[in-house]
Image (cartoon, rainbow, N blue to C red; front, side, top):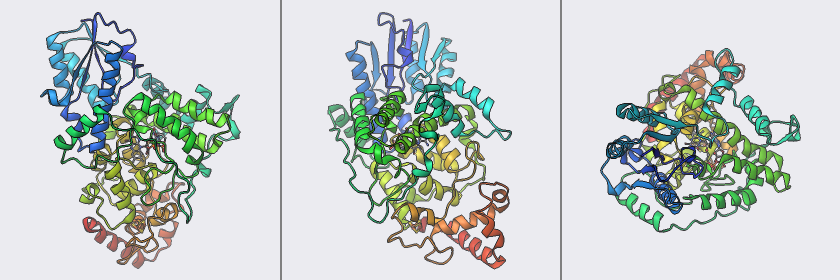
Length: 514
Ligand code: FAD
Ligand code: SF4
C-alpha cells in the first residue's frame, strides 16, 4: 500500500485534502467508530447519534464513489480507541506513508504522531483547507497583532478576513460604512415573545440513523439526554437543505434577536448549522456566500447578514486559531483558581433557577442551546459560582451536538469563564440577574427575584455577581472596561458588603438545592 488515508469522524467531506491525490489502486481509507470518542466525556445521546450516523452516511458516499474503505462499526470490533484501530491496520499491511487531514483535537494529533513514530512510518499531515485561515496564518497574525499583554482581538482578525476574502466590502471600506452592527443585534423579544417563528425542515430518520439510534439507546442508555427531537442533518444533502431554509426563513430576523431567550423556545432564529459545519458537511465559504448573496438580493438586512457572517468568518476561525496557539495550556487554564464541583442538576436541569432549568433542560432534551444561553446563563453562572473550568468544559463538550474541542474549549475556558485570564476578551463576562431578565422571560414565575441581592428570594446570579465584584474589586477597578461596574462597590457600606459576601457564601454551600 502507498498511503493509508485516515478519515476522522469530523472530517466528512469529499474535499478532504488527504484525498487530493488518492489512487484507488494503491491507497486505502480507514474510518473507525470507537467507544473512547463517545465516552471520554459523558456524551449526550444525540451527539453520539449524529457523529455515528454522519460517519456512516459519509462511508456510503465514499463507497458510492468507489473509494476503497475499511470501516470499523462500533458493534463489529473490540478496539477501545482510535490508536488501537490504526495499530491493527498498520500491522496488517504497512503503508509507505499515513495521510490525514489536520485533526480538530490536540489529543488526536498527539495519538497520530505517537502511532507514526512507533511504526516508523512517515505521517503526512495535510493542512485543513475547510478553514479560511490556516493554523500557520493565524500564528503569523497573532505574532503581529498581539498587544503587550499577548491579548488578541477578534474584531481586528475579522476585519482582516473581510478584506482578504472581499466579503461585504465596497472597495477598501466595509459595506454600509461600519465593520460591525453589534449594537443592532441585542434586542429582547418584548412582552409578546417570538412572532412568526418558522418551523424547521424535517429530516426523517433513514435506515442508517434508525440503526444508530437503536444502538445508542441500548449501548449508551445511561448517557445524558434524550434521542428525540433529533433535528440534525446527517449528510451533505440535508445540510444544504438546512442552510437554504435558514437563509430564506430565518436570516432576516437572526440579527436583532440573536441574544434573546424565551421559555420553551430553543431554536428561535438561530441557524443550527454549527454541527454540519463542524463535521465538514458544509464549507464555511458556501455558508458565508449564501448569506452575502441574500443581502445583495435584498432578501436580508445588512445587520443580520453581517452579524451572521461575523460568527463564522470571525469567531469560528478565530477560536480555532487560538485553540492551536494555546494548547495544551488552555485545557488546564484556571485564572481565578475556581475548584468547585458541578452541582448534579447540570445533568438533570432540576434547579429552581428558571433560567438554568430552561437552558439545561433544553440542552438535555435537544443537545442544543444558543450562544447566549451558553455564555450568559450557563457560563455566567459557572463563573459566578466558582465552578472548576475543567469540569465545566467537560460538560460543554459532552452535551452539545456541535461540540468539538477546538471550538468548545476556547469558548468555554476563554470566553465564558475567563480561565485564560482574558487572552481574547477584554473583561470577564459577568452580569447580575437583571441581564437575564432583560433578555428573556425566564424570570417570570421564577422562585427568585433578580433585583434582590440578599434574602431567601434573592436571585443567585445577583447575589453572586455582587460578591464577585467585591472579591475582585481591585482587578476590576484597574480595567477601564469594568471600572464602572465596581464604582458602586467602592461606595458600599462595610456592613452591606459583609451581608452580601456572607449570604453568597451560604448560597455557594447550597448549590445543589438552589
Ligand atoms: P448561530 O447562532 O446560528 O450562529 C451561526 C454560526 O456561527 C454557528 O453555527 C457557528 O458555526 C458560528 N459561531 C457562532 N458563535 C461562535 C463562536 N463563539 N465560536 C465559534 N463559532 C461560532 N460552537 C460550536 O460549534 N461548538 C461548541 O462546542 C461550542 N461551545 C460553546 C460554548 C460556549 C460556552 C459558548 C459561549 C459558545 C460555544 N459555541 C460553540 C459557539 C456558539 O454558541 C455555537 O456555535 C452556536 O450556539 C451554535 O448554534 P447555531 O448553529 O444555531 O449558531
Ligand atoms: Fe435566573 Fe435569577 Fe431570573 Fe430566576 S430570577 S430566572 S435565577 S436570573
